[in-house]
Image 1 (cartoon, rainbow over the protein chains, first blue to last red):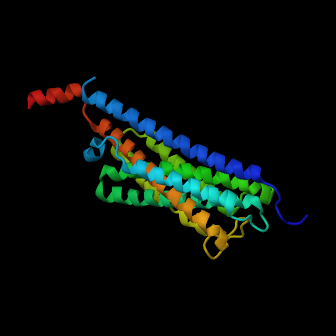
Image 2 (image 1 turned 90 degrees about the vertical axis):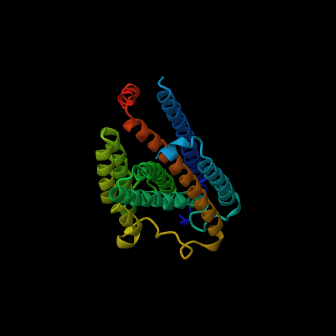
Image 3 (image 1 turned 135 degrees about the vertical axis):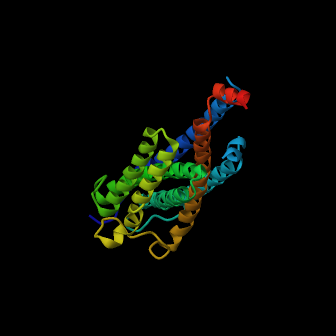
Length: 48
Length: 236
């Protein structure tokens, strides 16, 4: 027992991958939701 | 509101998100491959470069939601309601990531994924309080009641933010003190700052886009059905 954490790259990659993945998925979903809402609003505006 | 809605694909949020992604890539590269490992935590400490910027920006997003809630109650302008909804949603996302990153960092350093430590507990309370406000907004159909109730709930829930921030000073905590230039070695400053600005730009872009989505939904909610609008036009 040295009191020093050894290794741990797996934890580091997990933290970065989850963060990057979640931000990417949220960004894509946000853009998709916005485009869908625009299409719907445009459809309602033209009386369709 | 209509001015916001008519500008279909604003470029500013996309630029901000692009800058945020570039900064995050640069900061993460520096944090993962260039900065030295910490003396006691070794490589695991590199989680700090994503965990601390997430924490700062989560609290910033919630603080912006609090400001929007007050502005909405004072001015009754739905653009503030849209901004509040956007800031809460992005703040909840960041708070959730904060808890997940914290759990991943806790396992190799504390030996457990989770502990009912004051900092962790108050952060979990923050996450679920604002998640509850998002749920409240889903269940209320009347835009005025929805705006007022969620603004009041946001102001009440915001009380937890200073408690989260100062919890590590007020109580005995496993969690380290707030990260600042005084508590972090100078070799760790650059990736921390670059990633902090990266998350800030990305978060701002997200909030702007999400607020636009909320504004569009509000416009379609309050607009009369096409048939009624035509009849009103004929009567006039």
